[in-house]
Image 1 (cartoon, one colour):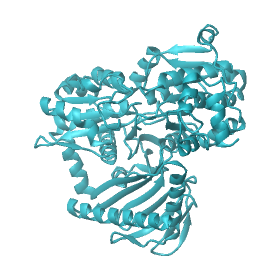
Image 2 (cartoon, rainbow, N blue to C red; image 1 turned 60 degrees about the vertical axis):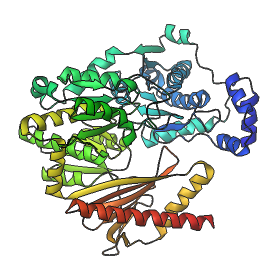
Image 3 (cartoon, rainbow, N blue to C red; image 1 turned 180 degrees about the vertical axis):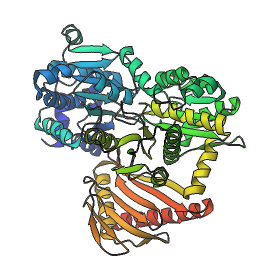
Image 4 (spheres, rainbow, N blue to C red; image 1 turned 180 degrees about the horizontal axis):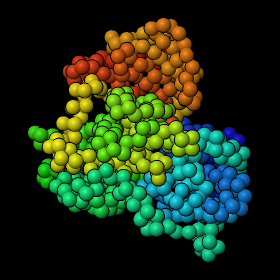
Length: 583
């Protein structure tokens, strides 16, 4: 079926509601019509994500129905027992999130699959916990995480509480693609689903055990209870799902001096107080900084709309606020957890941390200093969760902490995804411990880590290239970088280049190639002699190509100068590739 035929079907057939048909009837730009209907919204290993609008290449209830139908058929493959175990569904504060979640629940019910639906918005990590707690076969979170307000998404989880693994994702995708017909997917009526027991509403009975698990991760609970009130915290949920559980966890531990940014406390699908609900972006802390200055806060924390990412801003000795990068937070938490567990005598001999290849190598140095093993995995927290599961099943390591540079962190064994509630508790406790016991701030601790291991600086750039042409241009950039044998960037020599798409690495020192063991992925990583790297990869969830920069030097000023030169060189190369493609 051509995109024109799809467009006519969606804009004329009575299966599609009046709102959808009216929206499509107003379209006049042929390119817009083509972009909405030239393909189905791509179902990757994590699920779907896209702009909310009518069309096969957009997020809407009909796309949700079709994706859920594919999942339901895979659940039914497991027979009556699998159907009875069912699927847990959570959602965030975005526009249509609640409606999409209910739509998914009722499509599952129509297929005879039990659906557990949260009674209100909940953070993504609690969904991961709930899947295992309820012994469900799968899970769904309706969220677009930290994306702009126009986006929403549909993330799928499997019985281990982690995002659906590639093999299972392929099976779901095959079922989705096998169904060419968009018509006839009717959800079960709500009351019928409830009365038949196929839809069960859940809430506090999951919150309590989840919070209990979070609190058990505290390393100094007595200190928290006794001195927690001394740490002044400003917290913002950025209108999202972290609000209630972050505050409950901190309060139950003893952190009573917590002020919530009132303008950002309640759900708001328009995210009217921020340009972009992403705790990585300094502008999202504008209101928190205002309250932090007024209250002389020690620590500002922000969680993204679905409560799986944590951003942190610290007050320095001069009273100025400094925002930490995701890598800096990850290194601080790695150092705090490992050093305190060692001091307490509870760091196991086979202790292991897991991080992504996009994350700073400084964490490797810190971990090795404590004789702790480091596992590096592909970008995406699902790979951290998979490695943690592998360690448990095969018994070769004990998971201590996992992180990725994009503000995702995890400790404990009861959640299989990044968890901003856990991270908030551990970060607050670390700040309290160093303040009350050692008389240091987290900034002081970070500086001492740099002095011991070297100054690692990191940064990111990304190019947004939307639509069909954008996808083609991203592919051409990756192809060009693969073909060019780059020996140095910004005057810094490259020791090796790893191509995870080809699963081959090459040493520039010996000119020898070697095999890579991680799964195939469209990623190029250029490692510098002496430490640091540049990594390039297309985003799996957004129409972007991302560039990751990490440099190491013996002083901060040298690291800043090196980073500037390398970034300029890389972005100039990309500009040249793009101009050549245009010709």
